[in-house]
Length: 438
Image (cartoon, rainbow, N blue to C red):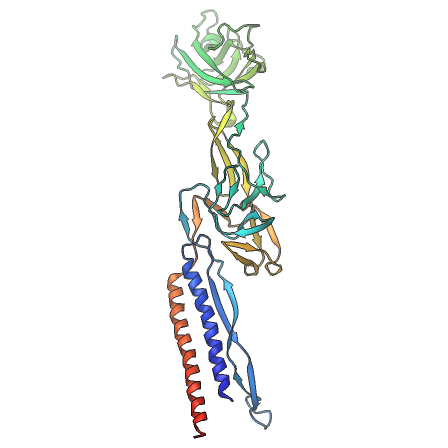
C-alpha cells in the first residue's frame, strides 16, 4: 500500500533525529572535557521511487519522471576541529596546542594522537597521560641539543640528574677607576676549577704616584694585584700574571698593560692572563683570562674623574648543579632548571599532523588513531610548524558551543515530533482504508 512509504519515511526520520540527539547529548556531556572536539550530523535522502513518466509528450516537458522520496538517512557525523579556548591551570605539565597538530602518546604497542595535554611525570620520571601512555618526543644530547624529525622516544626526565661543572676560562671587569691620586679599588669574584670547586679571587687596583722623571707615562698608571683567598700564599711556583701594571690615556680610555715605568707592552693588551693555579684537590691546573672591558659585550674599562665603579661583571664558570624544576617552552622544549643558575634542554615534545583530520578514528578518552583516510602522518616539533605553539600551564577546553547545541536540540525535537505525527497520521489514514470494508 502506498501509505507504507509514509510510515517508512517517518520511521527513518525518527531514527535519524534520534542519532542527531545522541550526538548533541554527547557534545553537551563533554562541554568540560579537555581537548574535546564537537561533532555534527548531516543528512541525505534515503532513496527515491519512480511513479512513472511525468509526460509522455516531447522534449518540452519540464521533467521526465515523477519521483517520491522514501525517507532520510545519516550521511555523516563530522568532527569540528576548530581551536578550543585556552584554560589556565597553573600546572607546568598541563599543555595546550595553539594551532594545528596533536600530541603523540604511546601505549599498548601503538601510537595515538590526542589534543588533551593533561600530562604528569610518573614515579620513573616518564611524562604520561592519565591512562599511563607515554608522551613521545626527542631526547636531547649531553649538551642540550635536540634533532627533531628523527625517531621519537618516551620523554623521560632524570630528576637525580647532575649538571656537569664548567671550569672558569674568563672573567670580565667593567666600570670606572677614579682618576684621583692615591685611590684604590678592591673587588672579588668566585671562579671554578674543573671539578666544580669554588675559589675566591681578590683583585686590587691601586693608582700609582706620578714619577717626576717620567710624568707623561706615569700620570695614568695603575698597578693590579690578584690573590686567591683560599690559597694565600699559593703553594708551588708563583702564579703567572697575578701582578703588573695597566695604563690609561689622557682621554680616560684604557691603553693596555705596561711595565712599572708606563711603557706599554708590545703588543699592549686589555687582558690579564692568569696561570699555574693548582687547586691542590685533584682538579686540573687552572688558567683563565681577566678582560678589562670587552668590546663584543659592549662594556668598557675607564679612568675618569669621579667615583670608583669598577666591578667584576661576569665569569663563565659554575659548579655542579642539581635539577630543581622542569619548564616547558612554546616550542615544546623541556628545560631543566638547576641550582647552579644554569638551564639546559632535556627533551622536546613531538607534534603530529595528518592531511585530513576527519579521517581519524575516534577511540574515546580523547584519543585518535590514524587511518588511510587521514592521509600521511607527519611527526615533527612545534618550532617546525607555522602558527603552532605549545602553551604550558594551560589546557585546551572543549570547543562545544552550548548556545548552538541547545538550538539544534530544539530543532531536532520539533523534527522528531513532526516525523512521529507523520507516522500517526499515516496510521489513521490506513485505518480509514481498512474501515471501508465495513
